[in-house]
Length: 322
Image (cartoon, rainbow, N blue to C red; front, top):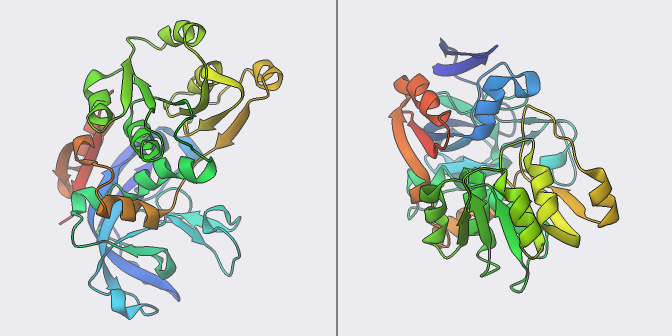
């Protein structure tokens, strides 16, 4: 099979044997994959990654001995794969691999394997180009599963990248007054057309002035993709409020610890979410992801696709495998 391989900042096509599913695993034929900012960070050196990347996908089940009824079905999957028996949340099992990120070949390949228990069937009403958003949408929805979001809270999402928009749309299910702040009018409009209030800035330096002028927020989600974003988020939150951190950068962040302590601010890390919940939201049409798609490429044109994905301000780039 053909696959993409990242090594020391290089992107190459390789030929590799089709994976063999072990006990409890399923073999999947990838239909569509999405390029994520995490993939770009891996390419830059995050995690010291070498391997087959990619973790946003919709696929068809080719083999699944433990769940034969799934063969031929379109599926998405939780990307966290426990190694051996486990208890609790698979996303935080110490001994785990992560598809396309940690010790597990990803979806920028014609085939991949994942635990059968991770699979979620895609409804016939959801197109491939929508289903491929299940993983990042689940990450956006995760904030509402960690924090009790009520309709009267003042909520801000900082950052109008793909994850920021999906998070704002997800929080909008629970709160009618979500504010999304970013630098791109066209991207902000994707959320604005679905009821999210937006504010466009020209430069991140404006955030300090806005934080001094505006009333503080109960909840601020930091999704800027910048190592500096966390301190801007802290500036906007009220005393005893909560900041949710979404950014994973290959660069370290320095936090204004004094303000954190004096104002008794809570910081919550937020990562992957519930794939089944995300699929339910897509099936019900509660979030429209179509406006987030910038372009679709054939797998043979992956390098051009990745180049466009790395362009500042790019939206979601999809790769069709067949």
